[in-house]
Every structure is written in structure tokens, then in C-alpha cells.
Image 1 (tube, rainbow, N blue to C red):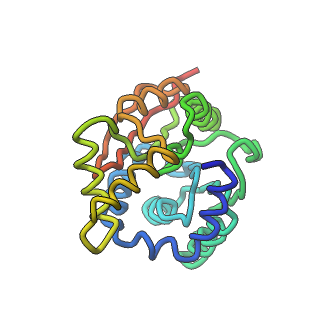
Image 2: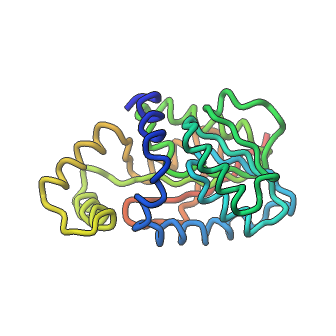
Length: 233
């Protein structure tokens, strides 16, 4: 799926996105719980970059947990950015946020960040070299030893483990039993539009982009999470 197609899709989904994925909230909450510990060593006045911020779920969690942090939320979907902005307004941390509708390369250079988050974004970049370049662009926005926390769907799609995890994953997303044809349609969609790679390969891509070797700190079904530090200059 091309960038503009993804942008259009997320523009359409934005108003009901959180409700649509409410069934997956226990996974999101666990990821955020661990996220707070991973980033707890950042300065009390840290600047954090949220790449592909979406509706702002991790931003809201971090803003509550770390009341002096400031944030830059980046997302190509204007509709998602507006939902994120409204969440920040409703939760009382709007003054601590900057919002950028667009991609990372068009974000103004306003200094380096102490940390960055990037959840369920790089999986939509199908070419490995382009995915490496994407992570390299995040590295370029971080201070030396700044921390990136990222999460994506990952598995060896040729393995029996993937077959089992895919069925579990679909059960998580649905409230009824999943029929075999639904599994096959989802498998085909993931093969076409999502770069589901073995976790070790995703980690290698991140490392090649200028980070220390990533540490996997999270897995729930197909979703894996890593943290890694920008290599010192």
C-alpha cells in the first residue's frame, strides 16, 4: 500500500479508531506500562518525538506519567492529528505538545530529542532499504544515546509458529470465531501490505540505521517491541 493510500485509510478511520481497536486495549496498556519503565531514565524535562502518533495513545500515557516532558507528534493523517490534538486538550497537556501533519522529513529542525516512540509504523514500509532509511531519519533526530522505543508486527511468516499466532491474533481482533477463509484473506493482506519479518531481521534493520543492538522487551501475539539507543557519534 502506497503512502497516500495509507494516509487516506487512516483519515477515514480516525474518528472511530480508538473504539474500533478497543478490544486490543489490554495489549496497548501493557506496552505503555513497560514503555514508562524503558524511558524512565530520560531527563525530567525530556523532549520526546512520537512518530506516527495516530490518536495519541502513547503520548497521553507519557504526558501523565512524566509531567514535565514535552512532545512532538508527527503523523501524515490530518484527521489523526486532530484526534490527537483534541485528546491533549481534553487531558490538559496541549501546551506541552507540537503537532506536525506530514512525514518526518518535512518536520522543522528544532533541536534533538531525548527519546522517540514509533508504534506500528515501520511495518508498512515494504522495502528493507526504505525501512532502514526511515529508522535512520529517526536516529538523526535523537541526541547521542537517545532512546527509540518501537513496536511492529513481526514473525517468520514461513513458520508453523506464524500460522498459530495469526489465528490467535485474529481471535483477539474479533468477537466471534474466525473461519479458515478469514485467516487466509488476512494472511494475503499481510503479505501484500505489511512487511512482517522475523524479529531478528527487524532488529537488524534498526541496528543498521545507527542504533545499538535493539533489546526486545515486549511481545503480545504478533506484536513485538524493542528499545535501542542511538549510537554515540
